Length: 145
Image (tube, rainbow, N blue to C red; front, side):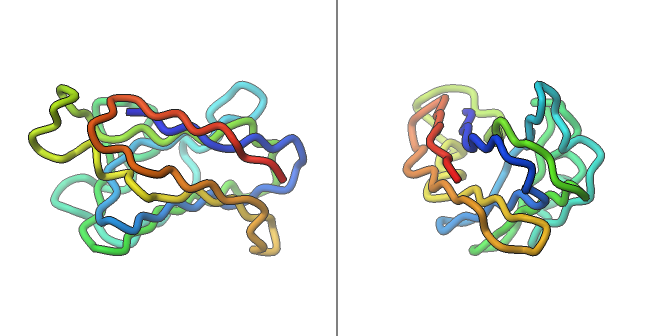
């Protein structure tokens, strides 16, 4: 499943933040600027870690791995270090084998939010993802400053 959010054309973004109201986040993140994934190798933080699903897996550009939090009000944050023009933020949910979703993994991004802040820590934009249960792919494209 892929949730795509953010359309910013101004150079003001420093931090991308994801959070969920329903529970753990299990995901792979890409932040696209000028056609490239600028999240790879950047400083990141998440609220907790489940088993061996370390935070580094969220930014390794490999959809076969993913980070996984282990708390009921999780967050994941990427610090880009300096302002960049952001074209999109892509949050790919962990690998789920089919739409019937026996394990409930497609619901992990339900009611999550992706937020972008500037270098002063001021939230510039936020996008709520909504219900992702039973959907193999979700695309949200409605971010405007």
